[in-house]
Image (cartoon, rainbow, N blue to C red; front, side, top):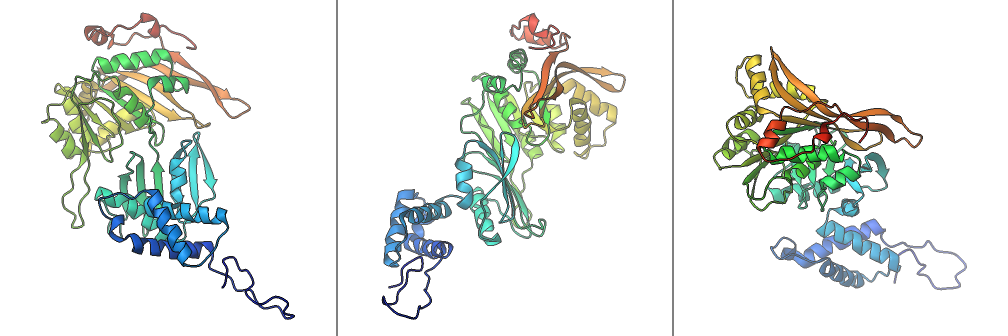
Length: 443
């Protein structure tokens, strides 16, 4: 009987050596065993009853014995583990998703995988068999959400069951094969204390932001992609009183609010016939009829900006959102553009008046060269002067250099200006020590 690994099968003592037949490779064996396990378990894999890894392992081990192939124990355990990941998990991505130090996974085709760890990119020695294998994993992610990805819709936004954000792009849009990007969601959400300990902001800045949320000021978190906007939005939302009704609106649901009275709404893409789409703007308008105390829009990126500003100006105070921008001043310009995307032929001055009346605080985040994420600006919108929106920095981060280890050096600075919203904070019963607004070179 031929043994796995190519042991000789001829009788001993022969003068003329014979070629040694080899059994299947580990990859071939895994494919064969995968097919047999799927056939053996049948409907249990697609039924409502969930299968445990132990059941799949027992089935695979039994089928492995029927093949008459004996493997060294380490290779057998590795084979069974990879088989479990293929059947119940996300294939080669499973160990990366289970690693708490990894914050982002980037798959550029079947043979190139990068990760982000501590804010820096590194390549990992993990690959998929081929493009079909990678497509299979992508389909496994998007199918439970009722979303699809094919030639007619070659890109998709989705999420994993734990809330991790997923984006996938396939040919013909991608020229390197299927591309998959996963921004992992932390099972234990960050707290304000965590951000302080990480050096993202100071205790004084944290107390001020907490007071702004409790006083129902309208806040937008701005920054680039991967700069920590959603993380900060989650932290800020934790200061909303549990007695209030909160409605969240997201493209792909990833916010994890700690309050009990939360209604979560999610964008719905069009079906295969191009019908049935429910946009973020539709959801914002509908949320106004749901008796919200707070509206949280995961990200403003289009015409919904007009509806969001109108909501802020018509009694729905304390709204929170995020938007992409390079600075607080550029955020104001982007909001003007997004309002125009709503299709309304409004004068620029009217749009700026809406923005100035609606927004109170802009919090800008940035990812620095060493991978650290910091709040670089907390700015107050103070109204209009002529045709210009007045924006005043309250706190800023000033970078002074980079040390020998590549770490960014700098300090948080309070500008020393008393914000105009201080009266709103006092009227809402929020008591803040006046010293947090005192000018200081370093906190």
